[in-house]
Length: 321
Image (tube, rainbow, N blue to C red):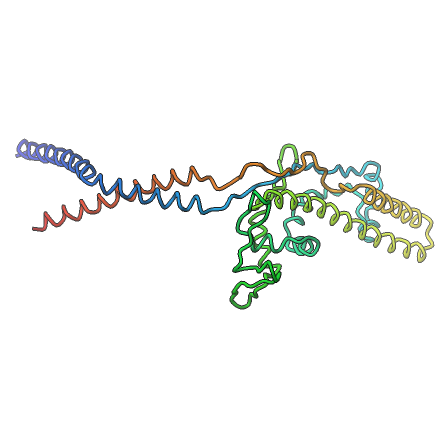
């Protein structure tokens, strides 16, 4: 009995292997029989991919390489150790605290508040929210007439509440964050600021404006903070009669005065430009060749799936009958 069962099992295994081989041959035969469907699917998908690739406008990328300006405390480290308590009460920053101003500057650059000030200072809203291409022959930005009417200089888009025809700063900020790229190399600490736009000239101009504005913003913040600290310290000097405290206050005032002088003397207060942005000659995207190749590949996959599905449906129907 045991030998007979063993023989039956071996015969069943041989049949299953043969069935698998037959199924594979039938599968390849089905694919070959459906080659017209696969070719047609590939052709249609490729045509669609080419149409999509050609309809997409060119995007240009302008970028600049920056270096953090050294903010070494120098002799102020000793001042921080000696009068650190008084400085903290007055809101005075005299170094030695491990504060990373570079990281703060990058976060300010990406903030909504900075963008709101950026929009107020520079005419960027129309180019940001209504552009849909660039005429390289005339160096003109193509504006979508359904969003903005150039002749009347009015927003004409149809927007659902709570949004209005004219884009808000909050809405524009979301679009701007899709175009702005800021990164810092951990080893060298160099910062790269890049803007992508339909116009290479606009991309370059925006990068220049961003660098200028972030330096001015951080400089003005530090100057205002230093001036507030000086005013506070002068008031404390008038109220105290202890000579030692007065001496400490005067030294803190000196450090804040130096901060104001250095800030006003340097146009590149936070970031120094190592490699300025230039007008890019070549587009950054779209990668039209890659889009066409992916379209053809997806067409092949779709055609194969259609042929296999039809094959298994027919096989199941044949077994049913």
